[in-house]
Length: 185
Length: 185
DNA sequence: CCGGACATGTAAAGAGTTACATGATTCC
DNA sequence: GGAATCATGTAACTCTTTACATGTCCGG
Image 1: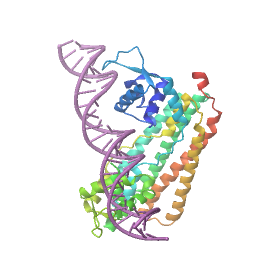
Image 2 (image 1 turned 45 degrees about the horizontal axis):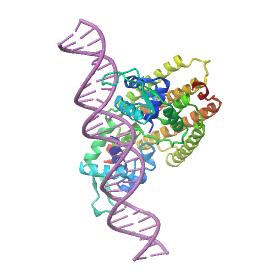
Image 3 (image 1 turned 30 degrees about the vertical axis):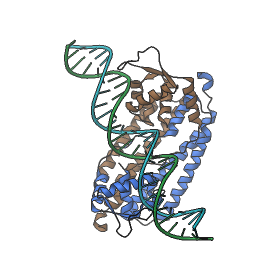
């Protein structure tokens, strides 16, 4: 139930068309809630029919024509409601940890290469976040909005930092492991 | 595409019935790949029809009767293939971060209570993990399997530690923020 | 006027969630 | 023999992903 609220947030920050939103979901909002253009168009249709957003009157409604949306008061109220409502955290779901657990049973052959690849990807992501931090959050600006947004970005930075550290450890530890295949089968 | 492999891993560790698996997915494997009993039964049916697992011959096949499964060589091979195959990490998806971003636009009213609640939940989870670590990974045991399993558990511990630290910071920072509602609307 | 980029959409399949249904066993 | 519990399963729905379809605009 988060995608509509992600879109409302994005539209409040700046009224946009479907494609604009898609591009913004490739970065920014997408760093912690990704969505494809198919999801976005469908959700825009729903939000409009519910009276949470409306198309800006300027554009024509035909296909292939750009159509921008803005948030209506009802949409803003719904977003505020959702933001304040209690929600349980979702349990962790990570395929890499699962693969490691599987590797403990069927052997680690081939896994280390992908661990190294993930390590590299996380290093790139961290570099990107740090670039953004340097650009958008120079010391001194501590408006309310900037502080919250910086807090969110720091979560991303610290999570990537964790993965880099953990994967480094994992890569160092894995190759020395003897393949259990020989013993268990 | 991870659930069948989670089940294969669990069954290799120990042949089980659907309900046994459901219980094990409430802890252990479920700490990083959760599943409900409905998903598990459906997937057991699929895995059996594909020849990856089979019901242990002992039990009768009627409804309400316990039925245990074991992994066949084809299932083990499939699991080994999947474990070694390259997979891209899934982008972060976290509703709490999204809510914070929304709060930067519509105001933080009500959010701090839920942040505190999450903080408490993560503290409990960390305590549970540390209990497991103390019980299952006493210093000295460094078999191949134990080292990999410990590595996975440490990921959980460090992730919870991160959230506790970050949420503590967030809770400390939020209440001092002025509500943007007054300015932006 | 045609090919490519831009822009909005539809269709179908896969994965996960929620609610409900049914049979067997056990305990009183 | 009735209620509670154990155990397996169905059905319907939502969310996400992948592939495809259609229309517009612009440069050559």
